[in-house]
Image (cartoon, rainbow, N blue to C red):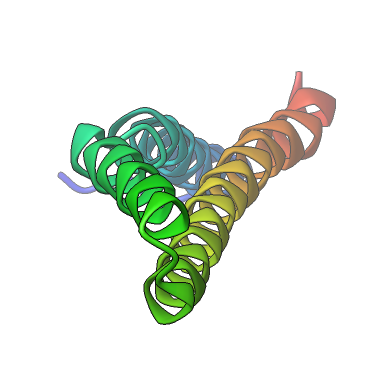
Length: 108
């Protein structure tokens, strides 16, 4: 037969599901920080842009230097935004794991 779902059981299920959601969000935040913010392609483009800017300075090409510096600043903003998203996901994941713990704890 089927046993009815008590309010305590419902709290346990909801708390457990939110806790698992928090763990998944935390892992995604770590993945974003490690895989996206530290992407080697971005680092390579930044290195090539710096070399291009140095070449423009040596050859007195002011347009080349200006464009290279704009590209470097855009890459910096891209990395900062990605890191911000990763940190936000980590904090959200920790909160989603903490609150169910506080919600389920009074049951016992």
